[in-house]
Image (cartoon, rainbow, N blue to C red; front, side, top):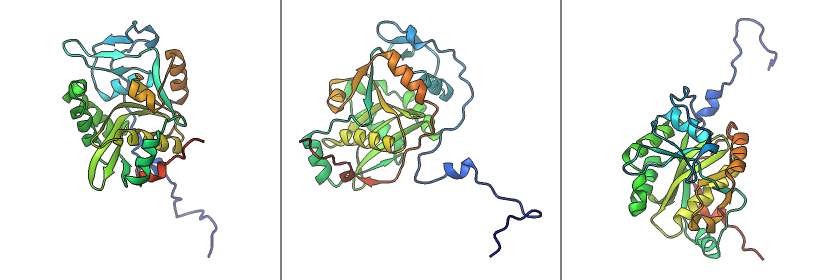
Length: 263
């Protein structure tokens, strides 16, 4: 077979980025967005409560610009939309997730599976409906805004399945190698922990840097979240926010996440 390159008459077909973007086993690549219509303040100018400013909107360019700067919206009833950049900031390093003995047992025996971006809207709905009064900040406008971001490739979800039943999950915004978790839920014990562990595992496999959990709660602290000074968080974010990191979306058994007990 003649393998010489043709010199005339036959164009050379070149692979394009679009061909890679359409791989069914990878999360959708983020689509380019126009500049934000709003000038967001320097996050280092946040007040003692972490509030950077109020107002603006939830349009995709506004949200992406905010997350790339280390800022996120957090609606509060009765006031214009507040934007936060807390100090300290809660983060989970991808190799530092705490897996308890009971969680290891769940991973070995439950038979659950996980996926990415298979049911984004259902995960958001589960987070909004499964937190009682604490879930009211996931308003209809917030859910629509993040669903729009998801369709543009900037927001992703991890689902936990028992057969065909969605029993837990987590969703958030990814800028480069940094994933900011917005909320998680569970309908079975340990399902939200499995979602977080699966997310950090997939993010690490894809070349991610760390998981941003915004604020370190007691629950997140037990899973490995730690507080870091905002200045250090922003340095790490700026170094990683432009990386090309794509999560694997294929459905996988959670038994693969089993980590041997420490000696």
